[in-house]
Length: 196
Image (cartoon, rainbow, N blue to C red; front, side, top):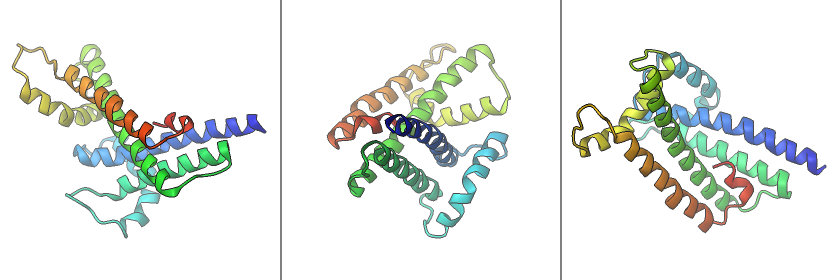
């Protein structure tokens, strides 16, 4: 029985985390004003549309952003955490605490999206500079808003762009000092920390 529960948690966390990533990507695409004609963006839109359509009727936009995708990401994370706790401990725990953990989890994933997009961007700049592949185009559109503040702060170093290094450091520090401390302060169980 324990083996079945462990397997169920593994499948749930893998599939749930994948869908959560797609939902949060929908919000990120709006935030960075990505090209929605990109085939990858089209896939994300189609994968999230069935659940977002009813939410849009009750959740208003804010600052020109469709907040329903962010709310859906929090709801998916909350459901994922509740089911993980139920399968592991036989209880879902306190709803308010679960909601706080879900918000922490979504924030952590939000930072990770930018972190890994930066890694991919740096690799692509070495192996395929100027690539017009839909994936490369999307990665660059995600990275530009994250790098712009650092580029404004740093002096021109003759074609050498060290802004990704600073961006990596800031994102990692936010993860270590903010996300990890919030998870610890709110008593997030270890099994749920695997989701963030």
